Image (cartoon, rainbow, N blue to C red; front, side, top):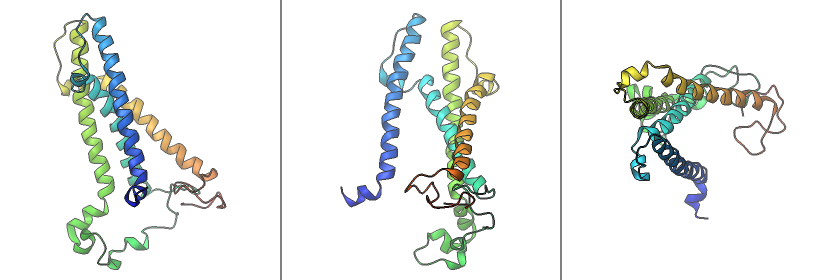
Length: 219
């Protein structure tokens, strides 16, 4: 295996799985959408055309939205909150790590650390900011994809006039879609936080060492 691939295998594996499952979602979603169109007497569409529909956009972005909200919230909350004994928590008495002290910056430190000021202030919070910005973009993608799908369904079912994205934002349908994903994401993270107190996974950085006491906090 080439060295560059071995050094980046985790990212390659995760993004590879993402692309495979996204492709499969599009294929199965296309088939489901065409079945729905056929039921209403409308002509089926091609796979390429399906990728531009609200049906596909809504399904993709409502899931991305919940994932990035969970990750952004998790990164931010773990900076300030602790859970005794969890591998997912920093120790109770740890404020900032020694390496977070910018006075210890070296020539190899990222340039915002060496420059200071506003670039440093942004960089210190850049991970949570990036995740929450992706969440915001996904939220909008869900909103606009959802209203397109809603209007298509209404037109097929009753010929009703389309509504705006702002109107769709105020519907129970939109928030039901969001909440059913948001609650499951925070449940999964909460379960990981608690289970990592008592359970172990050999060689994983998400787990405490096998020999660590349950009360020991942080991996």
